[in-house]
Amino acid sequence: MEADFWHQRWSTKEIGFHQAEINRFLKGYWGRLELSSGSKVLVPLCGKSKDMIWLAQQGHRVLGVELSETAVQEFFAESGVTPTIDQQGAFKRYASGNIELLVGDFFALTATELAGVAAVYDRAALIALPTKMREAYVKLLSELLPSQTQTLLITFEYLPGAAEGPPFSIDAEEVKRLFGESCYIEPLESQYFDLRGVDATEHVFHLNYR
Ligand SMILES: C[S@@+](CC[C@H](N)C(=O)[O-])C[C@H]1O[C@@H](n2cnc3c(N)ncnc32)[C@H](O)[C@@H]1O
Image (cartoon, protein in one colour):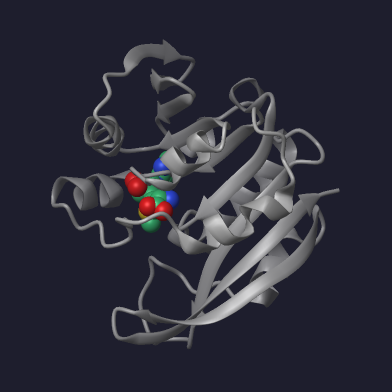
């Protein structure tokens, strides 16, 4: 999807993907990664997800990346904190406590921004991207993330043609196609999910970069 599509979504508040509550799979499975509490977690395409607050509460340093400055401003405003703002390379950086959010294009990230990342939390990031961008997203992560990085990945699938993405349908086969070469893939849970009237199955995976 082009940047304009997402800017439009944020300006018209069409953000049905945003969750008022902490994601239950995050709470249920994060412990599987066995990270030390101070480790750094990348949240790609982060929106204004409250999951970042939960991750910070676990003692993690959180690095979010988001195209929409509106989303980032709303995140801090709704958290009731005033961030510091500066420029970091191609990104405008908003930071407070152990949360820093980079405003800009995920595909402009370099190894500099991702240095020290120990884990990735992907909820509604991969599924937001059409096939070519999805492949570029996976390639960038596998090239730039430190080795041994772990990922908690949440996707969902629906029958072909049942809905028009985003969100795009990503089943276990697609996860294997995308990550099979670079990661060990452990499926954790699959569960029925009502995607605005479309029958869908939500999948949770633990990925370990080789
Ligand atoms: C489906 S939403 C998911 C947001 C968040 N992960 C959540 O769980 O609420 C996808 C987000 O990715 C952002 N986005 C899309 N393309 C991007 C890009 N190339 N770089 C950074 N952010 C992007 C959009 O603005 C949008 O907020």
